[in-house]
Length: 219
Image 1 (cartoon, helix red, strand yellow):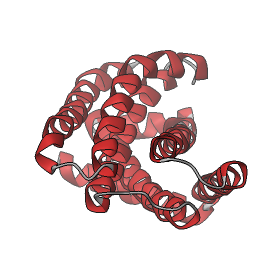
Image 2 (cartoon, rainbow, N blue to C red):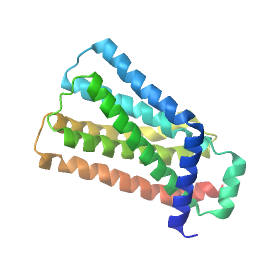
Image 3 (cartoon, rainbow, N blue to C red):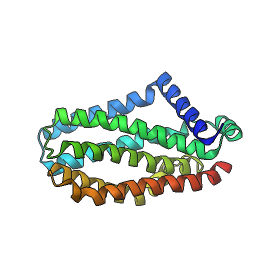
């Protein structure tokens, strides 16, 4: 099989395994919905700045919980089997693509739940929704890369936090800026720089993953 066919097969495999167990996605959905409800019970109503900050805090921790399992659920025997039949680039690309789809789904659920429970103070809902989707796939690409690295270091959660920090902080700053522009209903042209930066972060992260993961996989 060529690289694209290998990626499609691995994504299909991950989707089937997820659908059979449903444990991980159900636990993440429960986390997202319960966290939104707890925030509502605690604050009842909040201004736009806090509304925005709370949403991205929820999405950040949901991303960590959802993606941290990407490589931990693969035992050594299964990884050895993959090593013998597929290209390592296909493995990391499949993980990134699958996690992007998973995070986009969770982001939509979180956004709808959050908007229904809290009063929605958005000036430009379409741009904010775009920021949510772009932010969720950005979280997926970053955390998948870091999860792949830490899987070769004994799945050390501390190492994952340390490696994620330099990338996730600039990402959050840009996302908050973009989403604030959407909340204020500013002209979309003023958010172009933030959108370009987020797309660039995704491209760089995926490129680094493709360059680095084959060497990690070999070990």
